Image (cartoon, rainbow, N blue to C red; front, side, top):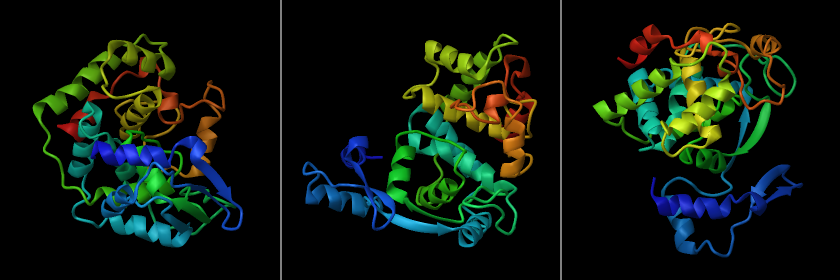
Amino acid sequence: MNKKIIGILKKVYYHENGFYNSELDRHEHKIPDSVTKEDLKLLVENGLTPNNFETFEHSSSLQRLLKLKENPKLTLDFAKAMFLKGLTGEFPRGRQTLMSFIYIKNLYEHKFEGKENCEISGLPKNRTIDKTHQLYTYYLGHSWNEIPIHNLIELEEILKYEEPKVTAEDKDKLIELLALISQSDPNETPGKLEKRIAKNKVLPKTDKYKRYGILLTLSECGILPNDFILPTYDKFSTRKEIWKASENLTTSHRSDIVLPFGGWKGKNGVNYERYKEIFE
């Protein structure tokens, strides 16, 4: 991503630049005076128009996600190549793609259950989202698994890119990270692991939350196992199942570290068989 584009988006989506539009019931961002017409044209040309709102409804969103499973371009090879390029810091945008791909891997047809969000898939009954704001977080290098509708926004946009060529250096970065994780003390917690990774400077261009996202993806793959719930790579767990399993976590309910990574401990180590299955 062009650094100039990131700089323009940063001006628009500066946290103090937002406001609530009560008439439309949504959070919008002003276009600051420092953003020129030429800047806006550049964003539009790259499919990143600010305040690009779309209303997502459960049934249609689910169908779009299921349709993506049939896309010949969206393969495990494509998703893992994006992840590896994100891991090295060469293409931070790619960090989310493998997690999004895993979400749809075992996703199935179902009817909406629940109130605001589906208790099966986590997809909203009806929600309006600024797609550009969400994509901006991915271009910064963030990745997460708590709001499934974001996977749809992410996957539909990432397909405009071609599959990157993975080098030996890209693969070595993941091997280096897993080697460090495998040295964990049996009682090491997810939070302590993140701090140790930061201290060893293994993951370039990351902060605490970006490192959590990377480790969460490895957990969703089953490479960082846990004792509470199967990784989404193996089984699509409903939101109800995830909420129930989360009750067994000893971390605070306000913790930034969610399942499945939240259930990992040093004693769980690294599942190298799963690593080989996916990445070799």
